[in-house]
Image (cartoon, rainbow, N blue to C red; front, side, top):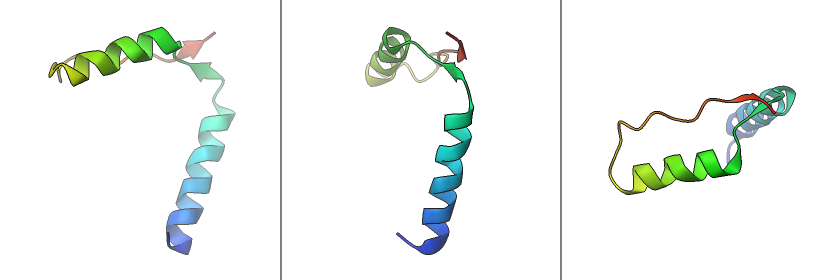
Length: 50
């Protein structure tokens, strides 16, 4: 990984850590199963304060 990629990844992780919203595991799992089944139009789960 380049220094630029490492810096970008660190910034993305810091941004994600600062976001207090989340998606419950079961909702994410259900969406990923829809994608795996070929339903690429399935709407992604919405992050919210848990």
